[in-house]
Length: 241
Image (cartoon, rainbow, N blue to C red; front, side):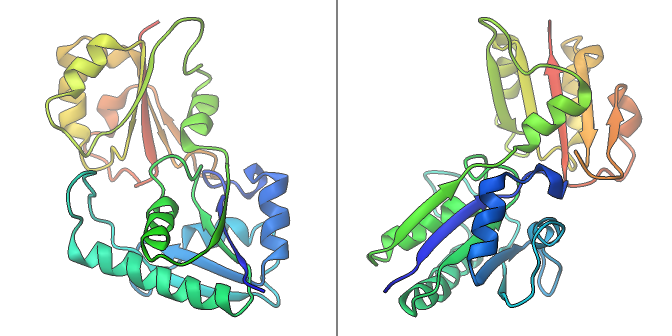
């Protein structure tokens, strides 16, 4: 009997923010297919999971996914495509052997998750595969909670945008939205601060670094963060109200 492929959101970093369903599926599956952002590096998703679920008796397959920009509607970098295809091949082999496979992904799978790219690659392979997606606590929600700010209330408009994809639209997004969440900000802080300063929105912006982790830091004056080595797991909330 063929196994099931589970993509499970494991939250923003604190193992205690994993859902009960995520924990149950991780306990149930004997094969964990865990993503790593660096070759021969540790997996952040695995470190979160192992904080709540024992790895004893589990087959842990760590797979490197290159951290390169993906523009929807355009062909990805060949190295990225190759990583997705190799992942799909490994997963299909495990499923056909009758194993359930779980793919733990940071935050929520629906938000900029490698897990969905793998699902798309599996679908394109033509293999008949059962897939289940398990939502998780997003870094967006965790950052909002840490900052003590709602994302949206009443008829307010919320926009989430990756700051690395600057295409001239961010100024318009800020003008037309009540709350804007900028993700992947660590490499573009000077540009973002300049833009927010021009729009007189700096005092409306909060930077949450390493949300939900033990060394979480909240920057209410984001100018102070411009020349710092900001962690990859950083989010800026701009709330006008």
